[in-house]
Image: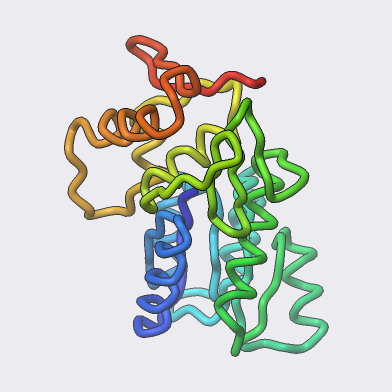
Length: 219
């Protein structure tokens, strides 16, 4: 899941980016509103975490422009403006959730997980396909009831495929969900992750659609 973090406090942005990446999110960061609008217009993220107090424009104006342009990307607002009126204004302008500063990172992650489940149409935190179960709260995978150890990127790839079971995802789409900007990605990175997943979960779960990408069929 690709997150665009719009935050001008570099120390906070660094901490949030690290915490979210540890939870399997691919995080890209910008510090100004105009840069955020450009990113959404050219490389739309899956979720935006938006600070309202930005140096070049108010976060509410960013939110307004996003919705007026037709963007439906979910937006979780971060702000020091704790008044009810400020929250109502943000929600009325199209924010999907609102978190006041200071906040605890586990709460932010939990709220992002709720948005993520809504995007994937999953109604609970456990996804089951055949003998494979993926628990998004515990970030655990089992196969035939047995726990399967899984590095962060393999887990993120499996999660993306299982959440979108029945859909074909290209290598480029999967790379975007796994890797942030600026990180060097080898040309066969996705193929290597798929190979490792097949060794752990069997060859029948992940299907290759030749010349297109990968998919997991609904059970």
